[in-house]
Amino acid sequence: MFRKSSLLPFGLTVFAVSCIPGVLRAEDKILFLGNSFTFGDGGTASVASIFDRLAVAGGHEDPTTEMRAVGGQGFQFHENDATSQSMINSRQWTHVIIQNYSTEPTHIGSVSSHMTNGTLLHNRILANNPQTRVILYQTWSRSAVHPLISGNSTSSTFASTSEMQDELRTNYQMLADSLNSTYPANDPVWVAPVGEAWQNAGALLPSSHADFRRLHGTDNYHGNNNGYFLAAATIYATIYGQSPEGLHQHSAFTSLNLALTVDPAFLERTAWETATGNSGIRYTRQPSGVTVAENGSATFTAEVLGSFPRTVQWLRNDEPIPGATALSYTVPQVATSMNGARFT
Image (cartoon, rainbow, N blue to C red; front, side, top):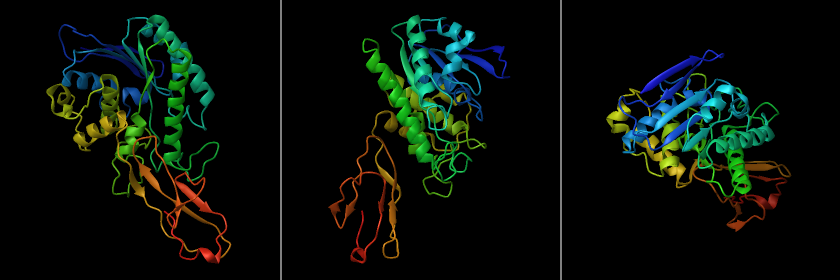
């Protein structure tokens, strides 16, 4: 059953989702709290409604799936908003998925606010039902052509999509680790690594790259149906611990008519591999040779996709370079004796 409730002050609509008509058989009661990345701006279905259909396609009892999503808002809004508070208190939720504003957990936002308000919202959810599983919806970087990706890391921009995604990944995980450490008696908070799945799918690469797949909408910010399908599939894999592979063929899902333009089997596999930490490491940019003047500097850079944690070690002529454990390595002063040296 799909219900539409009152119009929000922001001109957006709150949806409650349980899409198959008939008697609810729901064992799971699932609430999404987020913004346009949750209600699916740029797509034709919300992440909540896609998730709901995947759950049915996967053979699970039709969950009661509801959503409170307000454009441009995050943890602080939902913690203080009367409607969000009422929805939190309206059921004994088994799972609540919470999503912050897309730049808040980064250096151009406020990581401290992310931590503070994420903790407050978590505590409010558990005050309603201590058995609720809270899941953090890790979001995605802007696309490579978005103005926030400027080539330089400043107080208002990112050097690369990788920098933005790494900060989102790190700070959603930091919040989960903090909550799990502070409240060890509660069910552990999980991170649904949606943004990481987007990265592994190739959405954050330049559009000219052979591995690029378009998951962003035309604003290079929100998603399209491909991106929201991957988000929902990643959340499905996180909640149920089961692969979503093949679910796109089920009538419960095809009824949404998403008209995906990226192979759904690839997206389902990416969701599962990312959620389980089994996405293989692969290069998207190999280090290349450089020619420099004597006493000049030389920088070698590699870019990779794949699950964390990753271990990096640079070698010079097959010998490990002490401390060279990042994806970029700079030789500060090149001597003539280094002519022909091989860095890997």
